[in-house]
Amino acid sequence: MESTAKVLQVNHEKCTGCRLCELVCTASHEGVSNPSRSRIRVIKWEAEGLYVPMSCQQCEDAPCLNVCPVKAISRDESLARVMVDDDVCIGCRSCVAVCPFGAMHFDPIDKKVAKCDLCNGDPQCVRFCDMKAVDYVESNEVHLTKKRDAAERLSVAQKEGAALHAQMPGS
Image (cartoon, rainbow, N blue to C red; front, side, top):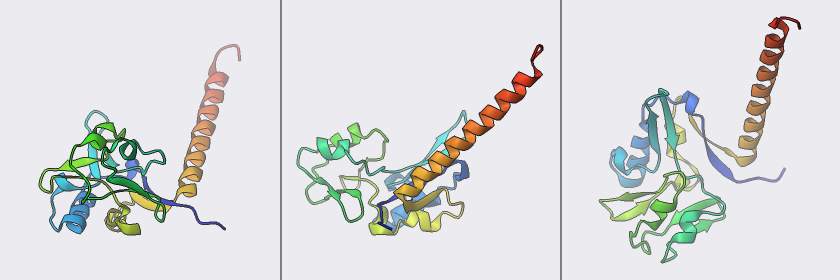
């Protein structure tokens, strides 16, 4: 079987908001535990009571790569990831502005842009997430999971619709 690219898969329903992923990320990349410098961010949706880990989606047609005026952003095909060359980055933040996921951020200490680099194929956020809210899987597994979930939701909706129809007068 042909190997496909691996991606970070986030299941927000499993996330407890512990933010260990943020701490591990900065410890691994920066040598400090400082969530404001993390390449993965846990966003809290107050109204819904949800925590959602957000990270670079390694877009195929990456807006950040296309907008960079000094070509500091490139694609590493070996891990199917988008990379920032810190030696070339001028800190203009154009990539931060165009990222549709808010996954790029400017590190005020290093004065450079930072984003998930998949920890060179061994994402530390995945290793330390006890809840498995973040996983590193083959991209085709993500597609299968989404299709299975969609089919399950459709099946439940159809059963509920049939039950509702059976309860209606004159049915």
